[in-house]
Image: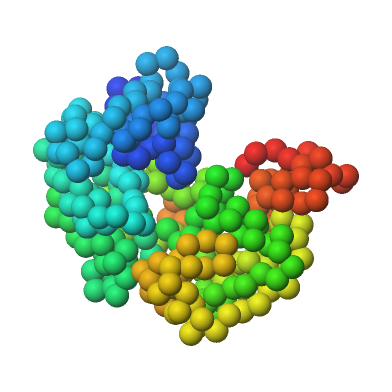
Length: 323
């Protein structure tokens, strides 16, 4: 719980990567609290859309290069709290997920920050066969070494209006046949607004959430097949879903191709394990958040994939409003 006695206008939180998909919602939550916000990322113009959400003098945008300690230091200096949202799926994962994350944590400690929230991923494990999963696991260790009381947040698949998950699958669902790989692999998709609220609460209340690791998933556990079917339904599509055997997925990953999208070998390795909250791990309930089902909101932005899009007969006003 956030202490209502605190005047957040006198405290600043730096959000690394605040102009991204998850970042925009984290920043929205933090701005509502009244805290001063510094959004730092490679291209500050990508975060201009946040300006109308802020009061005069509440928002500062700056350019950083996570690989350059001097720019990272400027971003963290004077911050009461730091949120690290920076992540990549390709390129030098070690440099971003491990080296830069650990450096940011160290700099936050040196700056006297009270709060550091690091966003990782479910199945983050230094011993993972996946380069992504291993780099995320090593990144958590680096962050803990740099900022002892850091909060680590591990989300499952994240969905929302600007995502690359539901929008991509909805586009593929317009085909007569929808091929699905790893059809029985289980996921626990979480709504981006629920995730963002949890991250913001963790950043604002380190006395309650500091030093802890949370695994955050939505209220529904779904197989890949069920997830595709739910997205197709929200998009008003009725393709025939065809589950492809694992040997096909393995071959595709070696060729770097998945129907409708590129697929790397590392992404296929990540699909080897269920992506759900592990038993005993604290989750959304620790933040007083019940979680939003995919079916409750996906129609808000996937309606454009229906015949006639948002203007088809019977398309409700609530469905045509951005989530």
